[in-house]
Every structure is written in C-alpha cells, then in structure tokens.
Image 1 (cartoon, rainbow, N blue to C red):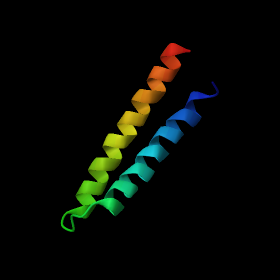
Image 2: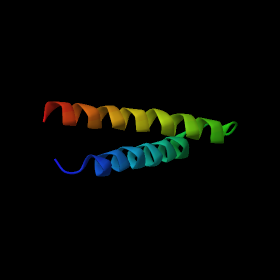
Image 3: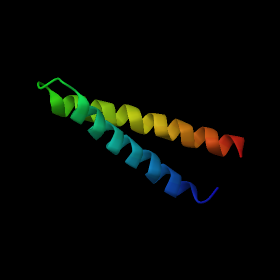
Image 4: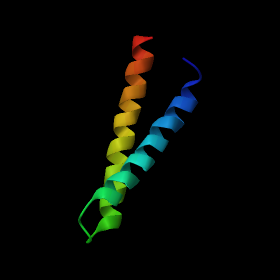
Length: 58
C-alpha cells in the first residue's frame, strides 16, 4: 500500500481541496472563512478515517 505518511498527506490534501470546492459552490456570502475551515477539517477527518480503514483491512 505504500508509506502511510503519503496517505496522510493525501487525506489532508483531500480535505483542503474538498473544503475549497465546497466554499466555491456555496451560495452563502457571510462567514465564508469559518465555513471553509470547518468544511476542510470535516473532509480531512473523513479522509483520515478512510486511510485508517484502508490500512486496517490490508
């Protein structure tokens, strides 16, 4: 599966990109920065959970 550090970086990058995409598509104009950080954190945690499950299964 490769080195786990690369998978962790990929999960964090997934969170950053997904959070930015979520903000870009969001119609809300107020409190965008707070919403961006919250969505980035949620997507990064989801990515880390996916990495944990991948390494648990293999």
